[in-house]
Image 1 (tube, helix red, strand yellow):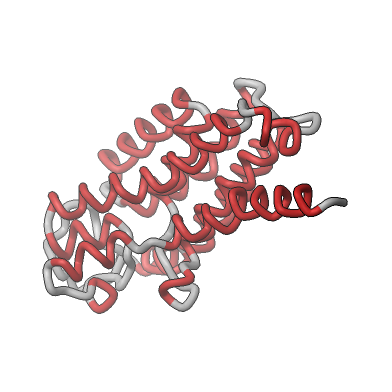
Image 2: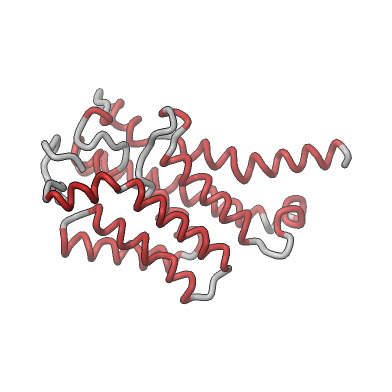
Length: 223
């Protein structure tokens, strides 16, 4: 293997794993809180996600956090899809399927959000970032997941319940549309991650202490 080929493989690995992971690791919720002079890790649930930002700082900061967390899931996956159309990377990456490099990027960016290198490998729960990844994979499934999530929130007022149910059902959208099977595997893996990251919420749901959507700032119960 010549030097050029080795450099190319290292670049591809960085593009598929390292860069997406670092992008996913950017703690936008924490940065927004610090811009307001508040460390949200010490408020509410202590989570850096959009829900805790909204409860701690209000609707607008929460919305900005949600948009940024969703965007950091969308753009790495979308850019990888575009990159596969480039001959320099395409033949090296694609092989018999263009799905696996895209799935790897999606998993890396979500892992970055959930276990951020900037937060000593702690992080959010990955829901907003997952939406961005899914929107990049197939916008129809992304919209369907968002609508399902919104309906469940409206009916139960529990963001955690909506997130868990939507994550579990999400892979079946890709199966129904006969997408690349690697995306089925990706989505099942993401669903497992999201359920695990919500273990404290599940415990509070059982105890009846889980906060409902729209609860006031700095609520005593964590969610």
